[in-house]
Picture 1 (cartoon, one colour):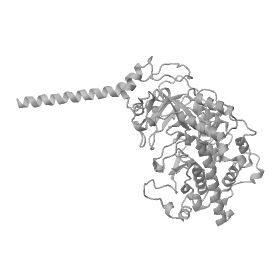
Picture 2 (cartoon, helix red, strand yellow):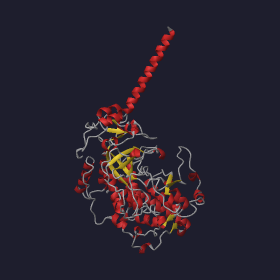
Picture 3 (cartoon, helix red, strand yellow):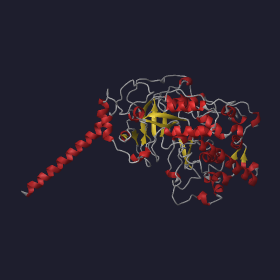
Picture 4 (cartoon, helix red, strand yellow):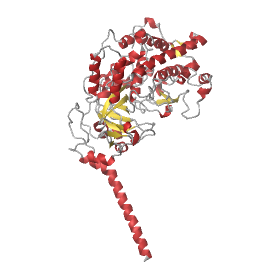
Length: 557
C-alpha cells in the first residue's frame, strides 16, 4: 500500500512537471503565433495621432489583449516621460528672448507644439535677423583653413568607381526585417552620387576629420535620420542604459537614445557622475557644439519623434525587448528593455500615448570594414564612490602622461586638450575611453563618441573636467583662436548654438540656462589658457597648427 502511494505521488509530480513545461513552451511561442495571426487586427490600444497619415497596412504584432498580458503597472507615475518638456522649454526660451518678435514667436511656438502630434508637419522658419551669425561664422578665415593634401593613405576608404557594392552584405541577419518589398540601392557598378547618404558620410572620413565643413551629404543624412522608414530595431548590448539599434529602409543604421529627462531638469546633486541619466538632447547638442568648434569629430545626430508601437514594437525581432512593453495606468504605451541601470517598470519609457522623443546617431563604418582602437583616457575618473584617480592627487601627472606613447609625440596630447574643452563646455564628466581609426595609427583625431551625460547641470561648472588643460598647459592655436572668436558678442557661442539647434526637428534642444552656462564656461577656459601663458609663455602653451597665415586663407577643401 505504501509503495502504491509513493508511485502515485511520483506520477503526479511528473504530470505537474509536464504541464508546466507545456505552458512554458506555449507562452514562449505566443508572440510568434500572434504575430502571424495579427494581420487585419488593430495593433495598438491607443488612438493614432490626429495629424498622422492613415495606415497603409495593419500591424503584424500583438493586439491590446496580448499587451494586457504583459501589463505591469508603474509604481511611479512621474516616470511617464512626455513631450510636454519641450513645451516648457519653449516657454522658458520665449521668456528669455524678451519681446523680440512678439506674435511671431508665439506662432512659432504653436507650430512646434503642433509637431508633437504630427511629426511630419512643416517647420516654422528660424527667426529673421540682420544676418545669420552661424553663416557668418563659417565664412570666417578660421573656418576656411584648408587641410593638408590627402594621399591614399589619408582616406579611410579608397573608393573605386568599378567597385560592386552590396549594402546587404554586411547587414546582420538578426536586424533585418522579414519583408523587403523595396530596395533603393544598386548592387552593380554605380557612381558615388547614387550611394545613400550614410555611405557618402562613411567614404568621406579621412585622417583629419569625420566629415568636411560643407559636405552636403551630412545635411542630407540628418534629414534621413528623421524621415527614413525604420525597418528593424534591436537592443544594443553593453552599456549601462537602454539604447536601441535602428535599421532604416536604405540599410543605414543609427543608435537611438530615448528621452529620459525633461529639458529643464538638472542632474540631482546627490547623483554620482557614473549613475547619471544619458540624455538624448545632450547627444544632439554635442554634435552641433562639435561642429561650431570646427572639430567635426562627432558623428551626425538628429532628434526624432518615434511611434513606439509602429516603429519599435511592431518591427523588432528582439523578444527580450518586446516582452517589456506594457500599458500604463494613463493608457500610454511604455517599455523598459534590459540594461544595468534604469531598466525597470519604475523607470519605464512612456509615450503620449505612444510617441517618444529620442536622438539618432549615425553609425560609423562597420568594424569589419574599418577597425577602431579603443584607448583609456589618461584622465579617466575612478568610477568609485570614495577612491580618487591618480590625476586628482598628483599635480605633476601630465608630465608622466607626456612621457608615455602615444602622448610623447604627434598631436595626441593636443587632441586630448580639444576633448577637454569640448567636455567642459558640456559639463560631461563621463569620458572614460576614446576611439581612433586603426588605419591612421597615432596621427589622427579622437572620435568624440557617447556624449549623453553632458548638459546635466547648468547651475554648476565642474572645474575638475579642466584639469588636463591646467596640468599640461597646451592647446592648439586654431582651437585657442576659435574660442576667443566665440567669446565675442557678434559670434557669441550661446547664440550660435541656439541658431544651429533650431534646425533640429524636436527643437528646442537645450534649456536656455544651458546655453548661458556655455558662455560662462568659455570664459573660464580662456582664463585657464591665459594663466598658462602668463606662467609658461605663449610659445610653450599655444601650438601653431596652421600651414599658412590664417588671415590669408580664402579657400578650403
